[in-house]
Image 1 (tube, rainbow, N blue to C red):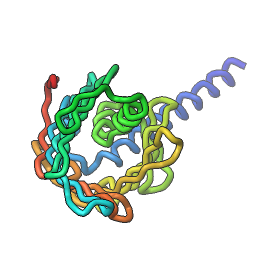
Image 2: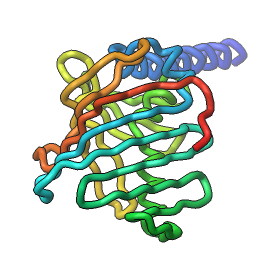
Image 3: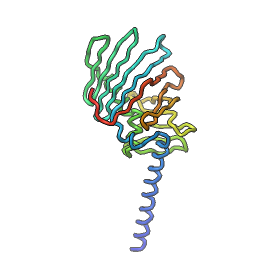
Image 4: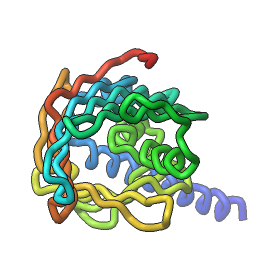
Amino acid sequence: MRATYHLIFFYLFIACNQNRGESFDNENLVLAQMGDLEKWQNLQSLYIKAIHEEQRLDFPYYSEIKRNLSPTKVWVHQWTDEFDNIRYFNDSTGWNLRNGVRSEMDSSMYAFLKNWDRHLFYRTIKNLASKEYQANDLNDSTYTIWDGDYFIAKIILSDKGLPYKYFTPTISGDTSLTVYTKWSETDGIVHPDVSMALDSSFVFTAEIWMPYFEDTTY
């Protein structure tokens, strides 16, 4: 009886370690082309300057994004000749500055932005590199990303091993899809330069992408 118990325990031990190894391999496969993983782990804040193009608008507009990952502090400035808007939010509150007029952020916009931040691509890659998130494989190029039992995203890799399609849940229960079509490397970190909707109705092109490895207060 004791021998049988030890044999069962041995097989359980092997199975647990095989599952742990498979999970670790999945995370490595998702991160294989993302550059210096230690720098991803230590990534604390980002500065991005970009140009946006939307089919519904007759003109492009520009944005500056200053983002601290932990604690969450996000400052977004978007402007053209037609408008000049700033949004700021953190872990507890948010406000808008629209054409020079400040107002508190309403609860629906705050919830939308917090969900966007929770499922942010850069946060996902950082937390995979830090082993805070787990990756499960659906096939050789498709992975679901989890924070414990909480679903973060689904990632489909390109034939070059880079994230190509990034699916995330919305607060309304739908799915948002971002397609990454161009990549660069900055300070050892591989990151998307161009992200867009599948039908090209929205295109985001980064002109400046700067990582920082310290807490930045905005």
